[in-house]
Length: 452
Image (cartoon, rainbow, N blue to C red; front, top):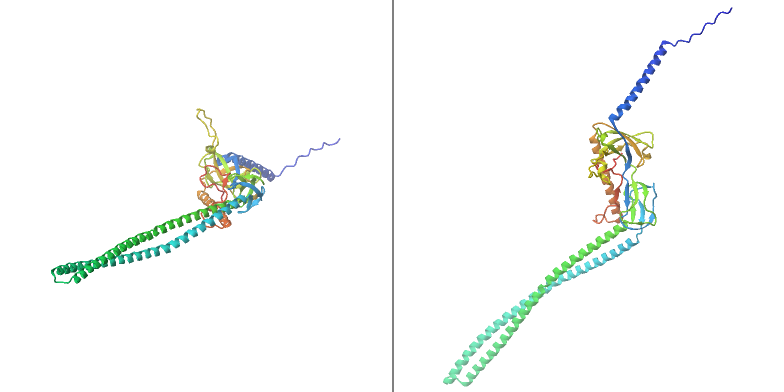
């Protein structure tokens, strides 16, 4: 009879192995609890919203003159540099207008030179005429005075001759003198009277000559009025020259505006007009943006606004990419988006439905190797940490923004001045108007992306 085979007992694990497994299980359970706790606590320490997107200074570049587009030099998605010509508008009309105004300027300058020459002639001639007329008046006055003296002398002669005639006549009648002597005295009286008459006629002529000389002097002095009128004419011609010059500057400016140039380096996001289209003033031709100036616009619900402050850290989960970006709050809008809605709220009927309002918040993006992958308009899930923030960092970044915008504007104007060759003229205007299309409304600070 065979003996029964004893059943084999399972091996018993060492005591140390059982302790390790237990510790590992407890660690996994602890990590799981921490992970679940973080999911529970995280929303209370962060403001999370999906109403966010990558934004930029997307501008609509418009022409400042109208006409047919005869050349388009860039395509959509083209990289452009500051001052690069993007399109040309038919310049023939503006070139002819420039030539006409240049001819008007030359005519105005020639008329100005002619008026200056006439003024110079008058300025030299009138004083000489006055001097000559003054000398003539003095000579006439001297002649009048000489005639007056002659008349006085002849009157004295007449008086003496009259006395002699009376005396010799009385003596002749008394027989004390001869008749011949009486006749000689009478003849002397008549001669003196004739000389007095001639002297008086000469005095009258001298007086008339003096009056005529005085009138000529007064007429010569009227030359000063001619000089004043000539000076006013010169000033008027100067105004006409300046007006013609300003008109020519404006024509040159309009001719320069037939070349639509990029105000800054960037990317052509959209081309609104094509070769052969007619461009109107103010209508956009291109939409461009600077890829180095990107940021995130977050519309934070008012229920999540508490704890959000400028300078707070933020996690930016771009939907198109797995790895999140980092950023910081730059500013918080001073008004909700509803204040800028095209259709404002109407509560005149007495009805009211509560709608959570959203406040625009701008997030500065921390640059890394994936910066070139970002595109304006991409959706973002923003998680903003709560805290007191860093207002000094935000203020400094905003100052850098303002400096960057100012330098870019000045550089654009300098490019235009260099192109026209009219540095210092008041006719120079800024480059084509750039209308921002991606700026959040109601911002506290200038709406520009900070420097990376």
